[in-house]
Amino acid sequence: MEWANLAAMRSLILAVLLMSCFGFGQAQETPPDIDGYVTSVSSTSDFAVDGTHVVCDAKTHYRTGNGQSSATIPWANGPYLGQPLKVFGKKNHKSQTLNAKEIVLAYPRYTDREGVAVIDRVLSADAGQGKQIVVRADGYPILIDSKTNSYFTPPLTSLADIATNVWIEFKGEQQPDGVIVAAQAVFTKNTVAGNEGKLRSKTEYDPAKVDPQHAQGEVSKLLVGTKAKRIPPYKDAVNQARIERIGASLIPQYQRALPVTDPTKINFRFQLVDIAWKYAFAMPSGVVLVPIDIVDRMQNDAQLAAILADAMANSLEKRDYREQPAMHAIEATEWAADGTGFLVPGLDLMWLGGSIARSNIERHNQERSARVSLGLLQDAQYDLSQAPLAWWLLASGKPKDLTNVIIPEHARYLYEVLGTTWKTGHMATH
View 1 (cartoon, rainbow, N blue to C red):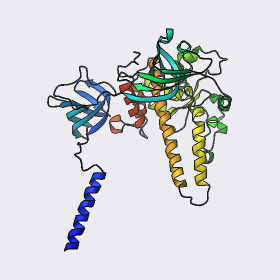
View 2 (view 1 turned 180 degrees about the horizontal axis):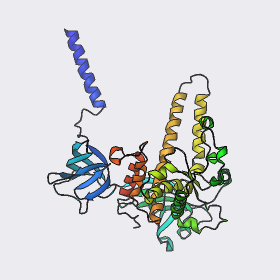
View 3 (view 1 turned 45 degrees about the vertical axis):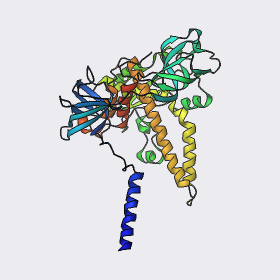
């Protein structure tokens, strides 16, 4: 009997310890039925969060993340696109509708940001006597002033030299209005180094002249991967003209203004192809391959522009060239893990680490291209709200109504950016 009591006591202690370790020892807040971003707005009491139709009534209660509560609607014209909301209520899964009992609004935050990107637009400038300048880079408005710890790589010497086609490495805090106040900034003139020049030359070709008779076979694709230079053009004069027109409208003004002899000028060309990709693929040379299936899935020019702008952003930000050192290091780690011939303790973790690193690089690239693409769309006067919808439409294998498709991360991230950097529909300039 004593043994049984002792065993029961040990079990109880173990259970308490486990509950404490996993946080069950503390009172847990009931998880919301939806925790996401506003994806459409019909009225102050009728909108969607992550694609779910939310309906509010006189009984709906509202509160902010800091605990302040209100029984009245907290917005005058409805929540804004991309606003983060937690919604509690009764959900009708069949109609994808939720009758909201309570809505929690996120409290405005100050967020640390850092990155390296090319300045594609000067939003405002008062650089006289080193006062301040607001540039757009990495998809953010960035304020540099006398308080910023700035470093200028020769031949750049001061804020007066800062313009488009200059690289900025920045670190700062993003304000609730979307502007990043830079604490540190390094400015470097855009150039094309030897290895980058080789990469551009390697990917330079005329995609319209690829001979269909030399198209890559399926066995070759499985063994060595898809070779872009062996993808033949898809013959559709109407849609080919369409992607060329939309693509040309997205080329940033600073790139248009560069002389043909400037090595940093990218000669963008757009070619329709018939290949099962869920994105358009841009090469360092400026060739952009656009699958016909994507063109057919888009509902309007703004959505197609969003897909093209995302691809172009990768070329403008030199994605392939910039990620080479990191990818080579990851490949070396994976080669070491695969080539030993026997198990070495830790190498399996190295391989896992390499896979995670590769995934992190890819996610970082996708988020950067998403942010930059919105600036290209804004400059070309396309509707920014169509950008996340474009990627949402591509999330399913076959065309479906979006109410039946779970919002993909790329679209979700675009809504997040619209709700922070583009909260008013325009980029803040202070």
